[in-house]
Image 1 (cartoon, rainbow, N blue to C red):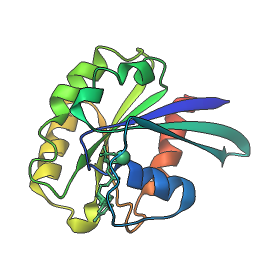
Image 2 (cartoon, helix red, strand yellow):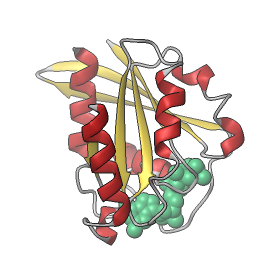
Image 3 (cartoon, rainbow, N blue to C red):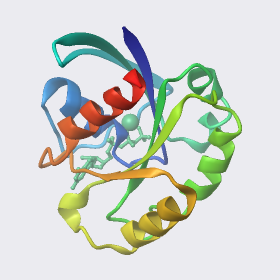
Image 4 (cartoon, helix red, strand yellow):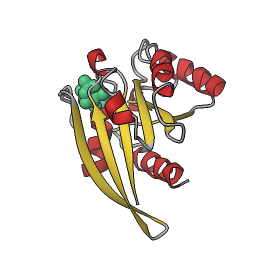
Length: 164
Ligand SMILES: Nc1nc2c(ncn2[C@@H]2O[C@H](COP(=O)(O)OP(=O)(O)OP(=O)(O)O)[C@@H](O)[C@H]2O)c(=O)[nH]1
Ligand SMILES: [Mg+2]
């Protein structure tokens, strides 16, 4: 069985770093903005069954939001990233949620991922995210690609949600 998992969210929110950590257990401080979309595949085993995860990491350039529908319309899961270390990091997320909820398949799951928690786990952006996710019934995860915190458990949990 295979699943399509799409990474979205503002520029520099930590999408590509998460992917690099999840796929290759690697991390670097340099920022290379993703131009367009990048793909990486990974096989994971859960309860002795093998699953192929097809990750699509979409550059956060606002001009790509409309185009990203090409990727999200047949997605099994959408991971919407924000930067927990930036006070304004969550501010654009609610309108992105509205946009994607109107365009994704009804059985696709939407998750919000707060990245960079190594910079602090009680920041204004996290406070806004917790409130928004509670009000809207959206699953919220916190992670650090730098320290690897929660990276594997998020991938596992999302795969399990895709399995159903
Ligand atoms: N401290 C810290 N910095 C991080 C973490 N994840 C990413 N960064 C840094 O944040 C910057 C942006 O990370 P990227 O993963 O490239 O961001 P992106 O969301 O892919 O950005 P676009 O491709 O432009 O949309 C880089 O300098 C990373 O090193 C993290 O977990 N902790
Ligand atoms: Mg990127």
